[in-house]
Image (tube, rainbow, N blue to C red; front, side, top):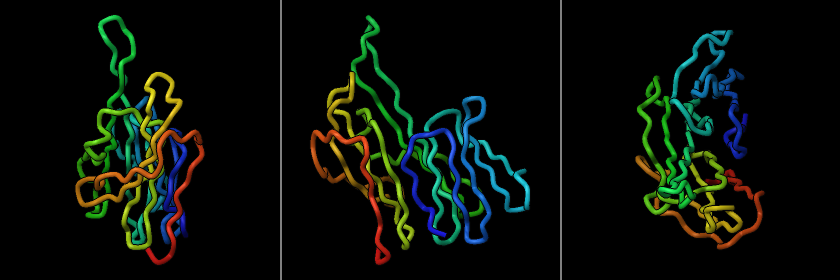
Length: 178
Protein backbone atom coordinates (compact mmCIF):
# COMPACT_ATOMS: atom_id res chain seq x y z
CA UNK A 1 0.00 0.00 0.00
CA UNK A 2 1.45 3.37 -0.97
CA UNK A 3 -0.08 5.96 1.30
CA UNK A 4 3.09 7.51 2.59
CA UNK A 5 2.27 11.16 2.13
CA UNK A 6 0.35 13.93 3.76
CA UNK A 7 -0.26 17.37 2.36
CA UNK A 8 -3.49 18.91 3.67
CA UNK A 9 -3.66 20.76 6.98
CA UNK A 10 -6.49 19.02 8.84
CA UNK A 11 -6.87 17.78 12.36
CA UNK A 12 -6.89 14.06 11.53
CA UNK A 13 -5.49 11.61 9.03
CA UNK A 14 -4.60 7.95 8.69
CA UNK A 15 -2.25 5.55 6.89
CA UNK A 16 -2.46 1.81 6.33
CA UNK A 17 0.38 -0.60 7.08
CA UNK A 18 1.28 -3.70 5.02
CA UNK A 19 -1.37 -5.72 6.90
CA UNK A 20 -4.10 -3.13 6.20
CA UNK A 21 -4.14 -1.97 9.82
CA UNK A 22 -5.17 1.68 10.20
CA UNK A 23 -2.87 4.13 12.01
CA UNK A 24 -4.69 7.34 12.89
CA UNK A 25 -3.59 10.77 14.11
CA UNK A 26 -6.29 13.12 15.45
CA UNK A 27 -7.14 16.01 17.77
CA UNK A 28 -9.31 15.50 20.82
CA UNK A 29 -9.87 18.28 23.37
CA UNK A 30 -7.19 20.27 21.49
CA UNK A 31 -4.59 17.53 22.11
CA UNK A 32 -2.96 15.29 19.50
CA UNK A 33 -3.43 11.51 19.78
CA UNK A 34 -2.35 8.45 17.81
CA UNK A 35 -4.32 5.20 17.66
CA UNK A 36 -4.34 1.98 15.62
CA UNK A 37 -6.40 -1.15 15.17
CA UNK A 38 -3.57 -3.71 15.07
CA UNK A 39 -5.38 -5.80 17.71
CA UNK A 40 -8.61 -5.61 15.71
CA UNK A 41 -10.07 -2.66 17.64
CA UNK A 42 -8.95 0.91 18.25
CA UNK A 43 -7.79 0.62 21.87
CA UNK A 44 -4.20 1.88 21.67
CA UNK A 45 -4.71 5.64 22.12
CA UNK A 46 -1.36 7.40 22.69
CA UNK A 47 -0.99 11.06 23.68
CA UNK A 48 1.48 12.79 21.33
CA UNK A 49 1.37 16.50 22.26
CA UNK A 50 -0.87 19.33 23.42
CA UNK A 51 -1.20 21.17 20.08
CA UNK A 52 -0.18 21.47 16.44
CA UNK A 53 -1.27 20.41 12.98
CA UNK A 54 -0.61 16.65 12.80
CA UNK A 55 0.91 14.74 9.88
CA UNK A 56 1.30 10.96 9.82
CA UNK A 57 3.40 8.80 7.50
CA UNK A 58 4.41 5.15 7.40
CA UNK A 59 7.68 3.78 6.02
CA UNK A 60 8.48 0.49 4.29
CA UNK A 61 9.20 -1.14 7.68
CA UNK A 62 5.74 -0.11 8.96
CA UNK A 63 7.28 2.41 11.36
CA UNK A 64 4.99 5.37 12.03
CA UNK A 65 6.37 8.91 11.61
CA UNK A 66 4.42 11.81 13.13
CA UNK A 67 5.03 15.50 12.56
CA UNK A 68 3.37 18.39 14.40
CA UNK A 69 3.56 21.77 12.70
CA UNK A 70 3.17 24.67 15.13
CA UNK A 71 3.12 28.36 14.22
CA UNK A 72 2.93 31.01 16.92
CA UNK A 73 2.24 34.66 16.08
CA UNK A 74 4.41 37.37 17.65
CA UNK A 75 2.74 40.68 18.58
CA UNK A 76 4.14 44.03 19.72
CA UNK A 77 3.02 45.88 22.88
CA UNK A 78 0.01 47.30 20.98
CA UNK A 79 -1.14 43.84 19.86
CA UNK A 80 0.00 44.44 16.28
CA UNK A 81 1.20 41.36 14.47
CA UNK A 82 4.97 41.49 13.86
CA UNK A 83 5.99 38.02 12.69
CA UNK A 84 5.71 34.39 13.65
CA UNK A 85 7.85 31.59 14.92
CA UNK A 86 7.33 27.97 14.05
CA UNK A 87 8.33 24.45 14.99
CA UNK A 88 8.11 21.18 13.14
CA UNK A 89 8.12 18.51 15.84
CA UNK A 90 8.91 14.91 14.89
CA UNK A 91 8.60 11.50 16.52
CA UNK A 92 8.56 7.91 15.27
CA UNK A 93 8.00 4.46 16.73
CA UNK A 94 10.79 2.64 14.87
CA UNK A 95 12.05 1.27 18.23
CA UNK A 96 8.59 0.06 19.27
CA UNK A 97 7.41 3.16 21.12
CA UNK A 98 7.30 6.82 20.16
CA UNK A 99 10.49 8.77 20.76
CA UNK A 100 10.55 12.21 22.39
CA UNK A 101 9.41 15.04 20.14
CA UNK A 102 12.31 16.76 18.37
CA UNK A 103 12.17 20.07 16.49
CA UNK A 104 13.48 19.17 13.03
CA UNK A 105 12.80 22.44 11.18
CA UNK A 106 15.94 23.98 9.64
CA UNK A 107 17.25 26.91 11.71
CA UNK A 108 16.80 29.29 8.78
CA UNK A 109 13.02 28.74 8.90
CA UNK A 110 12.45 28.81 12.69
CA UNK A 111 11.50 32.49 12.95
CA UNK A 112 9.25 32.60 9.91
CA UNK A 113 5.64 31.79 9.25
CA UNK A 114 4.81 28.93 6.97
CA UNK A 115 1.57 28.81 5.10
CA UNK A 116 1.72 25.15 4.15
CA UNK A 117 3.93 22.10 3.97
CA UNK A 118 4.03 18.67 2.42
CA UNK A 119 5.96 15.68 3.74
CA UNK A 120 6.62 12.37 1.98
CA UNK A 121 8.67 9.23 2.59
CA UNK A 122 10.49 7.59 -0.31
CA UNK A 123 11.06 3.85 -0.77
CA UNK A 124 14.42 4.09 1.04
CA UNK A 125 12.64 5.61 4.06
CA UNK A 126 14.11 9.09 3.51
CA UNK A 127 11.70 11.85 4.51
CA UNK A 128 11.27 14.80 2.12
CA UNK A 129 9.83 18.22 3.00
CA UNK A 130 8.29 20.87 0.78
CA UNK A 131 7.50 24.05 2.73
CA UNK A 132 6.61 27.65 2.03
CA UNK A 133 7.86 30.69 3.92
CA UNK A 134 5.59 33.72 4.04
CA UNK A 135 7.17 36.87 2.64
CA UNK A 136 4.48 39.23 3.94
CA UNK A 137 3.56 37.95 7.42
CA UNK A 138 0.29 39.84 7.70
CA UNK A 139 -1.49 38.20 4.78
CA UNK A 140 1.05 35.68 3.46
CA UNK A 141 0.38 36.90 -0.09
CA UNK A 142 3.81 35.91 -1.37
CA UNK A 143 5.61 32.70 -0.48
CA UNK A 144 9.07 31.29 -1.06
CA UNK A 145 9.11 27.55 -1.75
CA UNK A 146 11.79 25.34 -0.14
CA UNK A 147 12.76 21.65 -0.33
CA UNK A 148 14.72 19.60 2.22
CA UNK A 149 15.47 16.02 3.34
CA UNK A 150 15.35 14.83 6.96
CA UNK A 151 18.73 13.81 8.33
CA UNK A 152 18.87 11.92 11.63
CA UNK A 153 18.14 14.98 13.81
CA UNK A 154 16.88 17.74 11.53
CA UNK A 155 16.06 18.68 8.00
CA UNK A 156 19.12 19.61 5.98
CA UNK A 157 19.56 23.22 4.90
CA UNK A 158 16.56 23.99 2.74
CA UNK A 159 17.02 24.56 -0.97
CA UNK A 160 15.12 27.53 -2.35
CA UNK A 161 13.08 26.33 -5.33
CA UNK A 162 11.32 29.57 -6.24
CA UNK A 163 10.39 32.96 -4.79
CA UNK A 164 7.10 34.81 -4.50
CA UNK A 165 4.97 31.89 -5.64
CA UNK A 166 1.25 32.50 -5.81
CA UNK A 167 -0.10 28.98 -5.77
CA UNK A 168 -1.56 27.37 -2.67
CA UNK A 169 -1.55 24.08 -4.53
CA UNK A 170 1.86 22.49 -4.94
CA UNK A 171 2.94 18.90 -4.65
CA UNK A 172 5.97 16.67 -4.51
CA UNK A 173 6.10 13.11 -5.82
CA UNK A 174 8.85 10.55 -5.19
CA UNK A 175 9.82 8.08 -7.92
CA UNK A 176 10.45 4.38 -7.33
CA UNK A 177 14.26 4.74 -7.59
CA UNK A 178 14.58 7.08 -4.59
